[in-house]
Length: 144
Image (cartoon, rainbow, N blue to C red; front, top):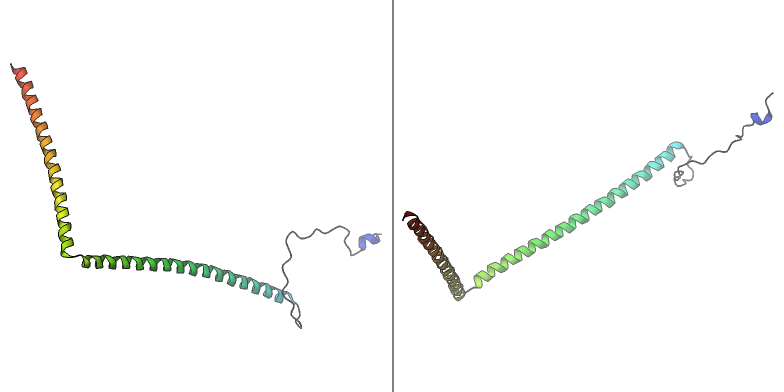
């Protein structure tokens, strides 16, 4: 005959706790009958709210970075446009005397460059002449 202990509905071994945390329960709604479908619906709503909140945060981050880039580009355009206007105004403001002085300075620079080129060409000519003399000396020594 089986013992009374074997027929008892209470288990004799210990049950280990679950390795994962229990899900949060939905808020209590009075006069509602709790069911598995309402529990799942509440969890899905929470997940949807979290997803919407995450998307909103990501969207705001994207829009703020776009705004920063747009502001930087706008300020650069303004700076470039203002510097271009300043250059045009300076060009209009320069008088004939300023143009004449600038032309004379450029002419003096060209004359200095021409003098350097002439002295360089004189050195090349002298070098060629010395080489010719040396070759003629070698030729006359071998012939005679």
